Structure formats: C-alpha cells, structure tokens
Image (cartoon, rainbow, N blue to C red; front, side, top):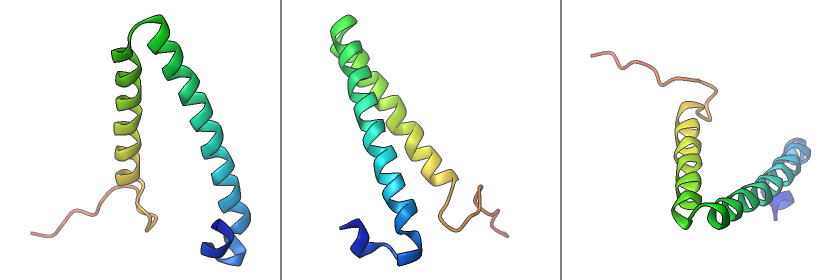
Length: 75
C-alpha cells in the first residue's frame, strides 16, 4: 500500500519510516506493559498520554511546509 501512495523517489524513505514506526510501537508496548505491571494501569496510560500529546505538539510545530514555527499573522 505504501508503494502505491508514495512517489517513486520517496519510496525508500517511506519504507524506512514505516520500519521505524513499527519498532517504536514495539518499544512503547513493552514500556507500557512494564509500567502497567510494575506500578499501575494509570502509570501506563499516563506514559501513553504524555507521548501522544508530545507527538501532537511536534506535528503542529514541525509543519509539512518546512516551517518550524507558525508565521506571525499581520494584524
């Protein structure tokens, strides 16, 4: 599916991102499971919520158009 969606010149990078994402999924699952077992379910959910919020902030901050911060609007 990724090969169908990505332009030919970006396919290698796209597959690399998918592999890194899969590795991140495994690591985060192990960490959440360890927190769940060692501390409490709330600790696992707190860890997941923190990194979900961090990811959302990074997505907004590192915009797709290459700008790091949003432009100041002229009032």
